[in-house]
Length: 209
Image (tube, rainbow, N blue to C red; front, side):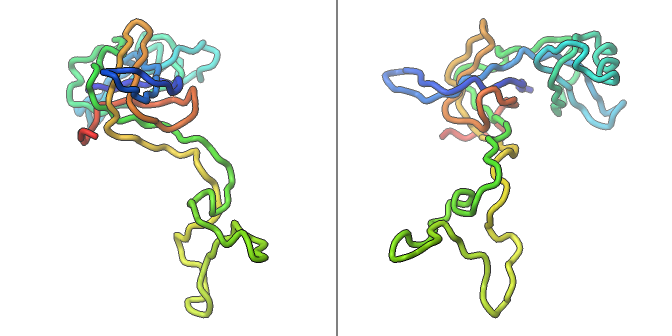
């Protein structure tokens, strides 16, 4: 299992082999193993990891007991990861960016930027109506038919809330790993704004782009 929680730092470029490579820099880990679940006790195998230390006053009483039972300091974010190799992990163990190497392919999940309530043209990339010849509504879009069926069909692309949803970008190549600063650079863009919490894991369906 190769997986970490982290945060998006921002985008830049790295010059490698004479080429400018667009990369996203991520703060990955360190993460702490907080809990282990097994088939015998819970019905399935998994490991719970935590990221980003936080003061005890910002943790609820039930979570204080959870961290106290594991004998680890309170953490802001928790993530449960399915794995069949539970025995190789110890509660309190620290996982850092060294689990990934340059050349690895990873999947990265995060929450996209929230755009608020948007019209159909921006939300669904509609072309809109003519902007000349007296048209007063160039950003207007059709929503339904006339007499038959005389209703708006379900699933029609209309105005509404845009962004602020979980998205996963698959098969991103790890370009550079900075173990000293817990940084990892991956080729391409990932969801979210700077500071967004992200989940990095080994690519499930690895395919060279």
